[in-house]
Length: 151
Ligand code: COA
Image 1: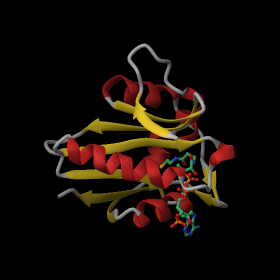
Image 2: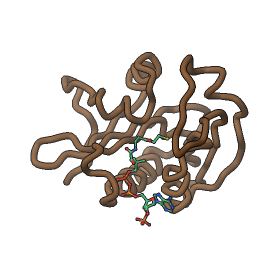
Image 3: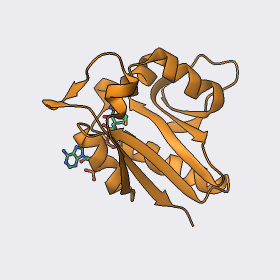
Image 4: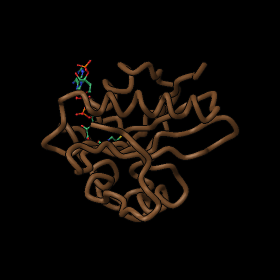
């Protein structure tokens, strides 16, 4: 498996991107202003992540996803570490990520990759998404903000 930037003439993997964010409008805006990377195996895209510039010296990992049949095999962790190294090599000092209060495995993944919880954006998903989102039997209401310093 290799992880590489999405080529300019390549179609973004919307099926994967929409796994991480149910809003096509939000996904399109990320793709338009971000750096999209894909994990490719045997010519097939099996993972994706997007980095966007937010504040000075700060980048946000806004969308990360692995094909459902490939999840749980360590690819997500490889993508997060690749995102951290990419952000570092681009000269950023901080990488941030946000996830839902109900996204238990995502919260585990980011913390296992060195991110720390730095805040809660209360009612973010209530205010920004039309339909109620449920995961793990929990309503997704708040965005948990995590951050990692880059050296
Ligand atoms: N408790 C403890 N650790 C947990 C856990 C739990 N409940 N659930 C997951 N983890 C850990 C795994 O054990 C693994 O750590 P380890 O290697 O130390 O054992 C780590 O989290 C992630 O495993 P990995 O196999 O690398 O993840 P993945 O390839 O399945 O990718 C996602 C993770 C989130 C990218 C993938 O599940 C996905 O695409 N989900 C849908 C899209 C999505 O939700 N994106 C994130 C939006 S915020």
